[in-house]
Length: 155
Length: 143
Image (cartoon, rainbow over all chains, first blue to last red; front, side, top):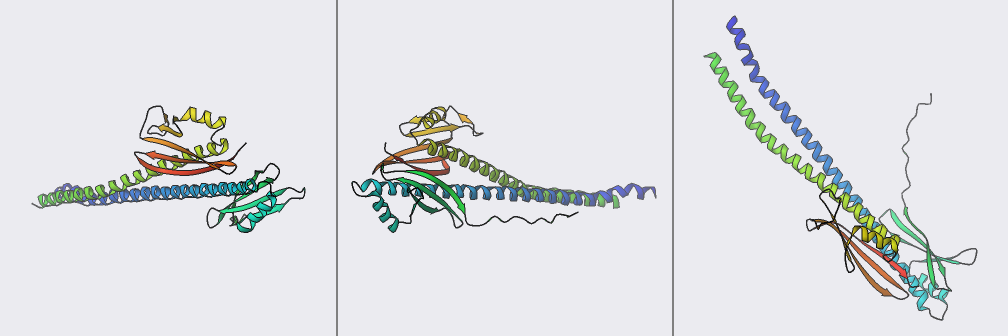
């Protein structure tokens, strides 16, 4: 009986080693996979943000080029009517020329940033000095913000 | 005899367990190393975007000839003609010595009717690899 009791721990240890090993390997694998997935998701998010920034500045460059075209049209008009030159330009290019209530003119155009976003630029035109002043340069999103509806206990 | 046999089984089990554990540990370790690399890449990219965008906004706000741009460049860049370079250490803190991590700004001026189109190519480089680059344009009206 005494011998049997002495042998018991050996029998127990044999199983425990395997169980411990399986447990440790499972823990390692789980933590490894989780940290990899987390790092991968972070990198994907960073790349997406970086791409969005590139797209925004590309649209901004295009807006500057369009402003240069408008300015060139006013300058090239020479002694002729600069307003007429800009009106002609707005027919060929995607510009919209608006007259304000005080008689001043404003030109507006948009540059696409992505499928759902665009850059909206508006510039006030001064035909006497043949210069423009940028009045608005904003990023507009087509998709409306959807608020999460949280059910609150009314009490 | 029975006790010896059980001890043998125990030893065999430990040997197999250690063998299996080493293989599993090697695979998992690779996973950790990859995760760390991805994380480092993510940190580098985020930092590159922030540094590049920061310079881009200063450039746009100060139209590359104003006092703000000049003082910004004197504080942060080493100038070579129209090329500006800012060096950073391993933690992306500014460094006075030339390092493997740097941000380079190349400015080009193109005269147009009634104005000048100024283009800035900003690149963030780490170990000769371009992490991130942006092109900024600014149209300046002639006085």
